[in-house]
Amino acid sequence: MRRLFPAVAIILLLVFVMAVICYADTNTPVTRAEFASILVNAVNGRDIPDRVNAPVAPPVFSDVREGDEHYGAIMSAADKGYISGYPDGTFRPDEPIAFEQMVTMTSALLQMAADTDPGEILSGYTDGSSVSPYAAPYIAENIKRSYINIDGDLIHPGRTVDNSEAESYVSGVLSENIAYGLNIPDGTTQLILVTAGDYGVNAGRTRLYSKDKNGVWQNIINFDCYIGAAGFSDSKMLEGHNNTPVGLFTIGTVFGTGDNPGTNMEYRKIQPDDVWVDDPESEFYNTWQKRGDNNGQWNSAENMDISAYALGFVIDYNTEERIPYAGSAFFFHIYNEPTQGCVGTSRANVLKTVKWLEQEQNPMILMCPVEELTNFENNS
Image (cartoon, rainbow, N blue to C red):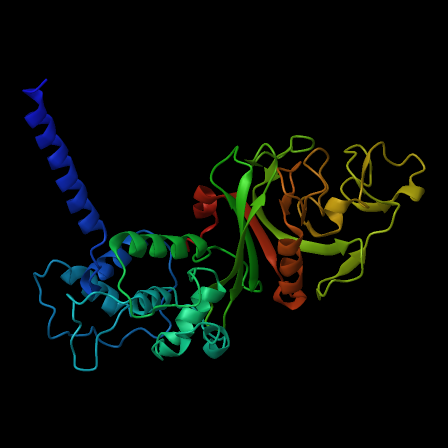
């Protein structure tokens, strides 16, 4: 045993040294040049909005030379207007990137609208006034959209970030901004996007987008949701299968058991005898009816006066054609577990969604596994 001790000690020492080295590498501040590469690599192959006001000529930095490790990434990002240098013509590639610079560069890449008065948001933080003027609108907008989470009441805008934080931030922001390039009708300027990781997955993500004056989809609100217990399906016969249909659909009537909660969409207050007919053999299949008007006109119908439907809206799937057995009663409503095919989420999320909807913006809802979004891209 004595003879083994030195060998064991050496191995443990090596493990400790390697751990220290790895920890040090992980926590080394990211330079401005390195972040340019992180940004360019992250958007590789992704749809991002075309620049509205692209630089007239490629910038020239006095301290960035062809052959430098990150030269290609720096020049590519600068050429597209994602990043810029300093007034003296330098880029300062080896300078650690500040938190506020990272947020600004990523926001510029996405042409993030920053219309909110930053003072309203930043005033809630002790060091809000120390955020640089160029970064203030973007820091505020990122806080508003929950892209960055501030621990306590200090933003620390000038602090450095390590590789892990930089990659996590960029990846998180891009994952919420996935509406670019989608083939959505020109008259629609509000889009609800509901995705899940794959077919057969019933936990999803809902993202709300508004198209700005430049035609860029701006991500407004994001929250988790549930879809049908059996997940998404592109089948044409969904009645009774607990699947959520894949596709792009218009948004129908907003409904609830109380008075209009503040939406300007068509609103219908549910009455005790309201039902949704799910009998495929009925001429009233997939329509809203009164139970008292039954008179044998359908064999089955879903009661509308229930807590899950205290607030929601109709997803216009098969509401015009009303093809028998194609599926009926697909709603966006209150529900905190997998559904029979609808989209369910918390009451708070449903409320802010219906209050956000604007009739004149012709809102639509796109539902599909995230990998299927390419099927809805504008390839013209």
